[in-house]
Length: 146
Image 1 (cartoon, rainbow, N blue to C red):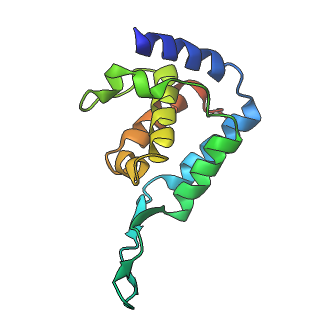
Image 2: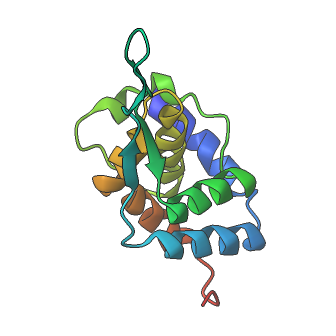
């Protein structure tokens, strides 16, 4: 039931995306095809004075994925979806069935990454992000986009 509600909300949001926004989004998508997610950094010793201090580990997305993420935010693809409460998305190997669910999935992956270090990278590595992009491509990629 929850996924159905969020799917409907996402579907309405997709209707508001302009052709220009789609073009910018799909160009950013083209730029990440086959690009690794990025890499972990940190954990390094930064001070050995009285006690050892280490830098917190963090995941840094590859530049291409950073551009994709920037485009996702700035071309109005983020929408108010209650991603935390969707039980279907917690199922192992859950995949979106259509463009509306793909938007739900992408919002989930992007928003969750703010709370789970490397979460988006995990979804990139597992092919979840590219699968969701493929669902959006089927319905919305402009045919005249080179």
